[in-house]
Amino acid sequence: MNGENPVRPELGDVVVGVDGSPSAHTAALWGAAEAELRGRALRLVHAADTDRRAYWTDAETMQAVREAGRDLLTRTVDAVHERCPDLSVTRELSRHEPMSTLRDAAGERGTIVVGNRGLGGFSSLMLGSVGLGVAARSEVPVIVVRGESDRPGTGSVTAAVHDGADLDWLLFAAAEADARKAALRIVSVWNVLTHVGSVATMLDDLDAIARRRVHEVKALADDVRELYPRLIVGHHVEAGTSTPGILVEASAHTDLLVMGRGRRPLGVGPSLGRVAHALIHHAHCPVEIVPAAFASRDDAP
Image (cartoon, rainbow, N blue to C red):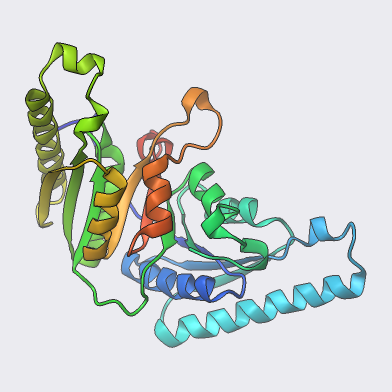
């Protein structure tokens, strides 16, 4: 078993940011279904950002903003309960800006869910305003809800791995599959162009590097099977010249695509790479990003 005594992780409560946009409404309903699968609570959050607005907005307008936020939360709770009548749902109208509000609401164990487009307080997710910032900087998992809401289920969760160091966050993908009673597909893309001309090719031939990747991915699958003996686990290494393109195509055939988020270089700045950017902008299904710090910390469940 890779890693130091890995354990089956516990999926936390679900926090959804709502702002009145159709995308956020879809995310709230998806998040409700996710919370129900997990057997956890759902928390709906609207960031009115009134603390910042107070500098240039009159009291009457501020009151209207707060009332609109309360009405939005009430409508969203009602819509959720139509789908999931027994689900435990709480709501929060925050005075603060959206990114910090979501992160505070999730705490140390929650999962943040956002839509792929926004409005008002959660605007321009396609451009990275809030959703991209949360995905890049959050210390807990973030799910960007993409794809058609009425798309038939596939009965599978896909994990996009790189090498044997990915076991910690891969177990969260396994937990997602287990909660759904779905199969787990572990996919790694072998992109020969990343090795051409590198130091590695001077020390080893490309076939040997490819065989090592296949061995590492198989070892990951074996580790997952050891912790989840009832889970159907498949693994595959696919050769290609475009890692984002291959994974976007794979997202068309799964219910959820999960990937890890690396540690920030030198500990500063956003850490979303080009593959993650491509997926949260173009994937055909929801994309979950699990930060390495969350998956590997000693106090993780």
